[in-house]
Length: 174
Image (cartoon, rainbow, N blue to C red; front, side, top):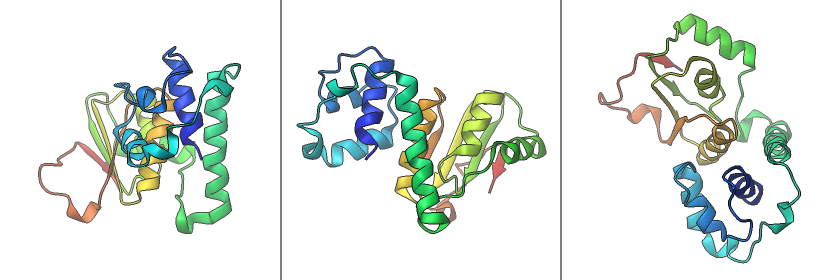
């Protein structure tokens, strides 16, 4: 389970006391909404958990652990239950083909874990980045990964076939 290491990362990154309750740590304004929702849905599961065991662990090590565990799950289950993650070179190529610019709003339909949007956030600093993914776990992991990378990507759990005209963007990847 990645919730405890992720919450420990948030606490250490923001220099919170590791004795805080998990619900207090995830209530921080920078924590992605889907992570807050996930923790709050099952708050009784986390009420007796402690973060003190992370006292001597570096934030970089926690980040590497979370990323590694997500990659292990992807490899273990193949692409049937998890997500194809674009390699960085393909993210770069898609960005070039779309001619992504700083002031663009970019949307990725079927965003998976948000690897394309995270790439765009890190390299182009666009004004708005939105990913639509039907799988809640994909949104959760993508939100965690974007937080770990210190970029904001709005990953929304939803069906790309139910988008309406209010979702207009400058660049669209699907």
